[in-house]
Amino acid sequence: MSEFLIYCDGGIKGGNPGGRGYGSFCQMLDSIHPNVRRVVHGTKWNDYPMTSILAEILTATDALLYFAKHNPESLPCAVEMRCDCRWVVKHLMRKRGWSQKPHLVLAHHEFTAAAKPFASVRMRWHRRTNSVDVLGH
Image 1 (cartoon, rainbow, N blue to C red):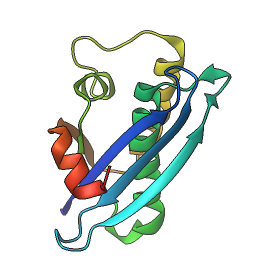
Image 2: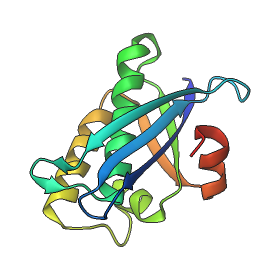
Image 3: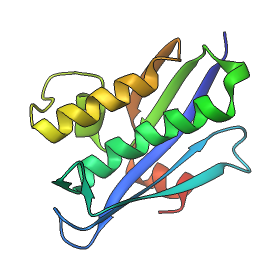
Image 4: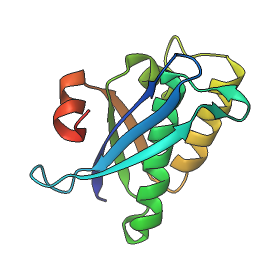
């Protein structure tokens, strides 16, 4: 079974909460030409104000949905995701310290649904400089 590596990063421009959420992700096909995708999340999600953590979770979800749609021949496969927010890694992998806030629980459910076509999804923290090197922000 193949394993794929996906980098993802989300953030917010403007006030936190309530600014405009954005993100980037890429599937690492080779280290020279990463295929970077940009997403815009807006200022609200399901009537909740956008936050930097929510933008990061939504970007990770978008990455899984995009990969499944554009690589159906690879499914099921294992995916390792790299993210520069320790809290998001803990929340999405349900490790100690995950949140019970309603909008983050809902975002977690969407991430879990997006992960269903995959054999496994692991998420690991990496330094912010890695996100900048790969994704450009």
